[in-house]
Length: 297
Image (tube, rainbow, N blue to C red; front, side, top):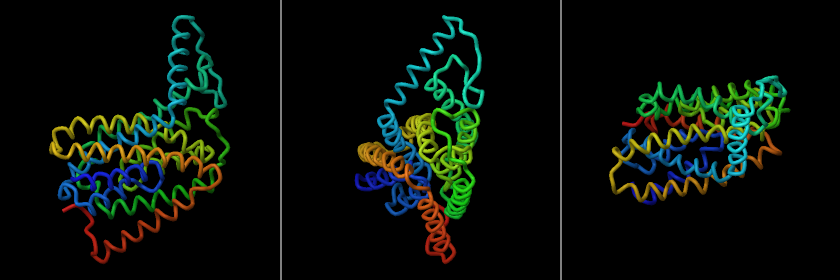
């Protein structure tokens, strides 16, 4: 993998990690077009996962104020519970928030709870995720269409009333389980979680915002785990290009977050739904006529 290949893949990673159009589909194509590692699925997966650390940095920087507020409130409220002996009572719009927790500290718990499904599923399915089956374009295309259809339904049936302060356990669980769908290539982590948020009655911007915060543990765990393994898998000469690609992913990822949050304030996800379906149909057509291979050879 040379410098140009790494930067191209990093840009694709940054663009598609947060936009609900499936990063896996675009990354598989980018990896094939650039020909990194001769199509080796293990090295390709390691490269993609490490570059996620760039998009993780983008989330941390963009939401630094939110993260700082959540962290300090979380520590403060639990400190007060332990040492001031406050009673455990519940309030909140859905009756689930402990009264001793501020909205920010409660949001911290929702991020933890919402991260459990993908954490468990990721550990159980780790070998399958890293294998060649996750690069199969038939499966990726079908999942792109399936999530597009579900996102369309969510747009139509979702009440879209909830803001961040209204989030409860149901929101965390729904979006958490939807995030686990992202382990299936073509689903799109952001697309699945935004879809879940809309089904839960959240506003589009709220669903996207919580989706990004929910991505922090998932992307961080995946990237750091793969980083350790990548140190043994990837050749030494690839690390300079990989670092450059990761930086490119971070810069583009930051811009992608800004764009999507601004876009969803005034628009629906319909453009992304149409894009997913059109791209999936194009891929299916190319596969059907044998123009491209379904899986890495």
